[in-house]
Image (cartoon, rainbow, N blue to C red; front, side, top):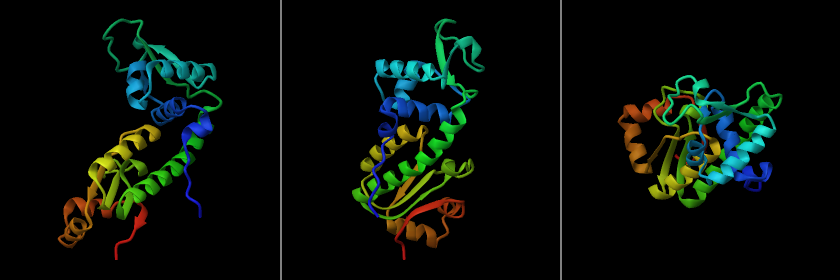
Length: 202
């Protein structure tokens, strides 16, 4: 089977637009101001403003004043604008369902890239990927791969998924030892519900 190399911008025409959509669909009840979004999606300010206008024109995102947002305090002025998903939009539920399927492709891409950059013995998604709030990590990686390479890949993965990812990385020898001594932290991960993407452990 040929490797997939799915990119959000191929479907939505713009990386910024795709990442903004992912952010709004993941956090549909939250509101964001423009500079906050530029950090979260790693895009230029003008690009974010342009794509926000496109999303508002489509009725997918709405603009609100700070005083309309519960829990927000006015730091600068009451005129400060925030943006939020328009959950009443006819397209909202369809887009959210589409992005759930897209996330499967993004996960596959991530796993393939990780596997190409190092010797991966085991990789599993858990935690927030499965809505498990009590699991202390979202991604378990076992193998021989540089920490900086993993951090870089996860940084890009976070922007495309629209949320932060807590990960645990350990070499195979440490994994085997901690499993033998029934390490509490590792056991809590292995005993939790998870999606195993790679398993080359004997």
